[in-house]
Amino acid sequence: MKSADWQGDLQQIRHLRLFNNVAASNIGQLLKEFRACDLETDEVLLSPFNRNQYLYLLLEGQLHVHLGSLDSPPVSTLKAGDCAGEISFIDNEHPSAYVVASEPCCVLRLHRASLINLFQQSPEVMQNLLELLCDRVRQGNRIILDSEQTANIDALTGTYNRRWLENIFERESTRSAFNASPLCMLMLDVDHFKAYNDQHGHLAGDYALCMLAHTLRSQLRPKDSLTRFGGEEFVILLPEIGLDEARSIGERLRLSLHHIESFHSPIGVLPGITVSIGMAQIQAKESLQGLIARADSALYQAKQKGRDCLCG
Image (cartoon, rainbow, N blue to C red; front, side, top):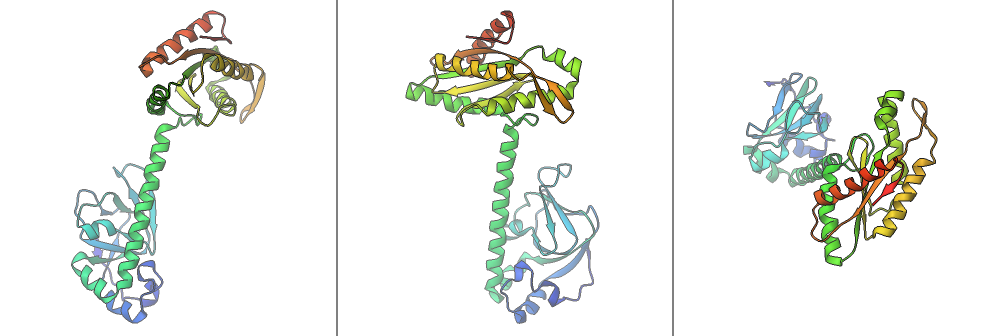
């Protein structure tokens, strides 16, 4: 970072959010506390490894924000008028992210030693900075939420994944024990899926799995959990449902796929698929592994009986 020749253009910054509602006569005095700097493309402005002493106000260019590593995709982009480093500027701690220039940039920076003078000269700046901090916290919460949701979702089918199954089982099994209510599991396996892939291609197999997920999900309650367990295997948790009702649900799901002789996909019309289903009801103090093992055993029986059927 090198010093820039910036003449303090009042018109350029008076409409920026940091100076919102600040009298024009005060902005000129405030600007005396700032120093202009230029950044080259890919230059790191902030790093979790270096304590930050400055608030940065981006005048020109664009900054990328990376969490965890510079190799990770940027989680947000800062543009002209945005601030950077406001959290570490105030608490004098290390930044929580990398901030990198994605193109040549010009920034104004303010050393934290000038913080008190800045607020005394203009309380409005303090209010604006607090609002910027609130926005940053809310943005961080959204990133966390999006990351959690992504971590629980199978990217291909949009169903839950095994990580979510482990979490939801703990909740549902505890509720089942507390309320003395049943909890059933259906384990589904696509029949002859390897042959389907060999004949029609793996992309066709992917679309078949997506069709399966859409067909099943449309028939389940919001409280039911459809999980892609692995490959062509899926698991469904059915809270507050006993064996008889679970068997009826499983048969209905099986038949809904059985009757789809073909379906449209981005690569053309593809033949339908069938599934074999194993069913089990949770026993007292049974673990997820135990319930899966019994449902898988019932699934094996369904395959032995000729597939496209339900056992358990």
